[in-house]
Image 1: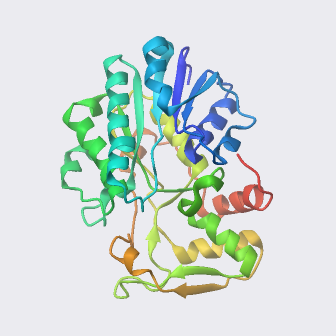
Image 2: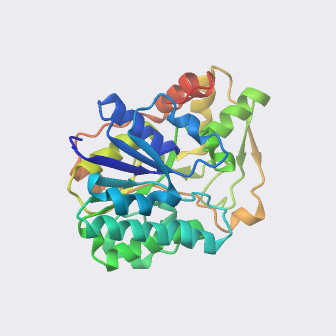
Image 3: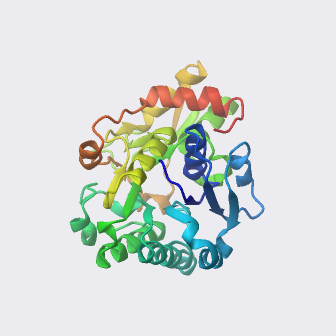
Amino acid sequence: YAMNGLLMITGAAGMIGSGVVRHLNDLGRKNLLLVDDLKRGEKWKNLVQKSFVEIISKGELFEWLQVRGDEVEGILHLGACSDTTERDADYLLENNVRFSIRLAEWALGNNKRFVYASSAATYGDGSRGFIDDEALLQELSPLNMYGFSKHLVDLWMHREGGLKRAAALKYFNIFGPNEYHKGHMRSMPLKMTELAVREGSVDLFQSNDLKQFAHGDQQRDFLYVKDAVRMTLALFDSALGGVYNIGRGEAATWNSLAHALFAALERPARIRYIEMPTALSGQYQNYTCADMTKIGRAFPQFSYTSLQEAVRDYVQNYILPGKRW
């Protein structure tokens, strides 16, 4: 990551953004320009003990670029409203779509490296598969407005030829330190750990499709944030353009996640199966698994943390002591 200019990171106080800052700091990189909307929340705590040049608010970004844009060498655009239950479509269009397109236009127009966060939510129910192929973008049907907002940016980038140079990262189920601020959007490993510590058991949804999935056997592609950060930066550092899945390429059941969690807590596993809310049932993904062929070809040496090891690290080194990465 030998850049001379500034690397701009939007969403820098978020889980993945602050992890990127931590990892780059560990490599000795400090010429970082952070962009985020800190408002009144606790997100700022993710930036404590991190090194960077400056932090600016999202609202000031384009004015800042007008004056000092030539200092920026590349942009890692991770900022967005990531609430999959957000109902205000106009807000999502403004915040996730128009803002991203405007930033992409600036980056591509000024010949800067541009890598941005898309989402596995763009794949919808997965009936068209989870293949990161630009030619298949038009066929995808996201299940919620958040997924649709990410999809619209991908479609625009593809249509304008931006994906020849820029990379879109479709993050799957990322979990790990620095997500305390995310409210109801915090990952299940965090929510389940808190429940297990408090009540000695965890709740998993009953299956809404018992023909294919037993209770708790719905599957997700879980990826530890430390792996997601390394993969994000490997892609940023390459000249690759196009859509890339950021996942493990392995689906794990909720039951196996729960067992890993109780093992990390050194307690016997106790799981209760609760009814899935009707509102969720229609847009619930019973199975997600990233096709990681493309990343595997680009980075054949990449090594993943096992789910058991990732859960243990997260629970024992971050959640229980209340620490951040």
